[in-house]
Image 1 (cartoon, rainbow, N blue to C red):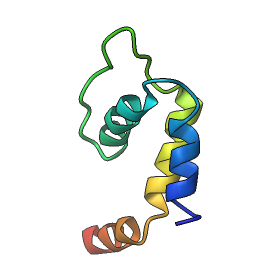
Image 2 (image 1 turned 135 degrees about the vertical axis):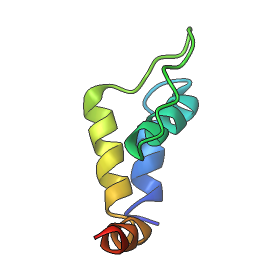
Image 3 (image 1 turned 30 degrees about the vertical axis):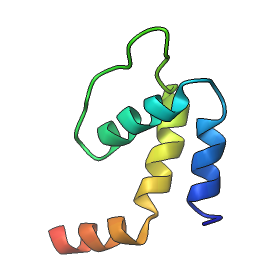
Image 4 (image 1 turned 90 degrees about the vertical axis):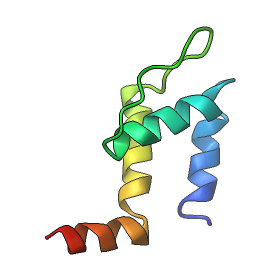
Length: 70
């Protein structure tokens, strides 16, 4: 929880509407780009997408999937 959920909540809480932005960014991180959010919402910054990508890559499921693909 402290390694994934709490950092995820911290990103979500940075701006109003980031709950939606995070879902779209998360889809992009896993290779399923769903496009930008509609105004008045804003997309995550590139740095925040990087933070999210790191969180996702460190999930045990992501490590298992990577090994299975090799």
